[in-house]
View (cartoon, rainbow, N blue to C red):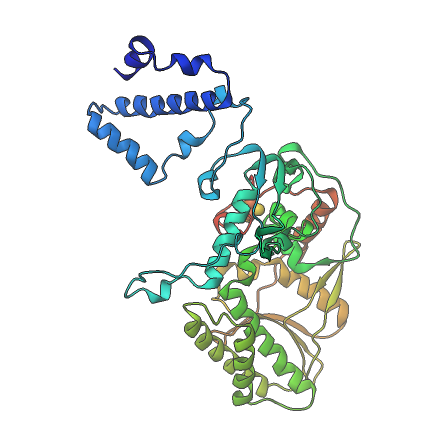
Length: 431
Ligand code: SF4
């Protein structure tokens, strides 16, 4: 009925079709999209006009119009600019994107207080850190809408009396030169290999670990230097405070004093106040677990004899050097060497299959030839020690060699998996 009225009975379309300007073209696209909704509604057996209009209202109210916001193939050559919010652009892609307003107070926007906080869910209330992470994700959503060209801008002033300053998110792009988005790591995978790079003096074990898990993630994080939000997540900060206290305990021993549990907790508390996730809703729980862990470590250190030899190792591997700093190296009075990997998480079945144990065994043999060597994991949560059974170290070390070869040949293809949704580059990655 609607199409009969539009195309046969009324003159509604005639003036629009006679005009050639972008506004008329936009009107035609809107009518086309409206008809698409109508056809889909009819296909489900819908006949009621009231229900159809309710469906249209629902699409608008619940922002369910992504499928209709995409430009139809007939309109892709239209000479026009589309203005939309970042939220509204989710799921869409354009040849060129201009992102204005990249100034303080606009991106990230000022956090609005919750007007009516839910009475019993105060732990879930959004903190300023959460707000910043959310805004940062939005920023990356906006950046990743551009296929070929991306322009970022801000005004010198947004009010007559105040100069604007650049958005802090722009610092995340520092070091990136302007270039075609097709040069990104995911695009390399689609188009083949990126340009090969010269061998580095040494490769960090942690960076190689990132490459082994996903070359594209390495490309974003290490090669392009893009920082992701989760780097400063509550768990990472909790972890860093525990590790800092473990290092401090050894420094105390090296300086000739053995710190007791009370001193250790005092150090941890001071570190927590400065670097811990103090605004996180679960900070109380993180802190309590951290205190248990450093107490356990302090008790273990008090019972140890010998001395510590923690420093960065440069492990020779197939003509390249891999830099790794073991968590703990304990040289017993009889000369035996124990290399400990300190774990704050739970023991997993796959822990002993990790290539880092093979690297630590190789490095220890190179640094302490002829000594008895033990490489083990120490779980701060339980106090358990686990000596990974000897594996085929050659095979495990091959993972590092292959990663180095991949980096040097410029292969940064995505390796998708279950961890992708938690990856800081999930929204920009084309994998
Ligand atoms: S989203 Fe997945 S494939 Fe893409 S970089 Fe992250 S881990 Fe790799």
